[in-house]
Image (cartoon, rainbow over all chains, first blue to last red):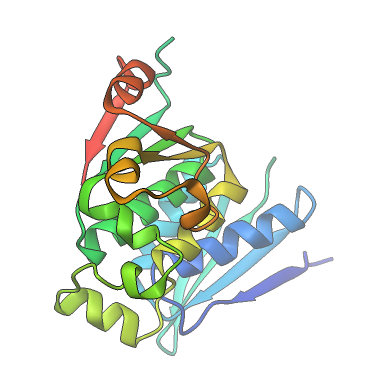
Length: 77
Length: 132
């Protein structure tokens, strides 16, 4: 069964807004949850993976779709 | 004892962009669980006054004006979020408080205490400290 992905829509939010939305989302969800953050801020596509590595979560995917940066993160702890 | 993870910021400038940068650094550092101390002094402290007229006395360059116009979260909102994320302590400089006869009640509800330079130096000895 495919894992459920929880979408966090932070389009229109500026740096570090999308990261903050992801952090809020991660804190609310149980370990193992995959969150997909949507951002229209291209800095987030670089910044969020840095944060994910540093915060010891897992970067699942990082791609752009129709001008929206989509970063999937699995909560590991 | 010096904490190699801790980050300390001396926030002295009354320039909106520098205060915003300090708030961003604080918020992201706090999200890693790093202890952050922010010593707010000199021209930066009025930016945290409850009276909007005093708070708006700080300068805004073209980047800062654009940030405000586009509704980017303000430094006050970021500092509030940072305190929810990790051990963030804000100190108001006792010199500026004294010369204006302000108390902590005159400032926004972000400060943990007032502190002098000697107190700040004692707390941050051996730790990373940035000045903005």
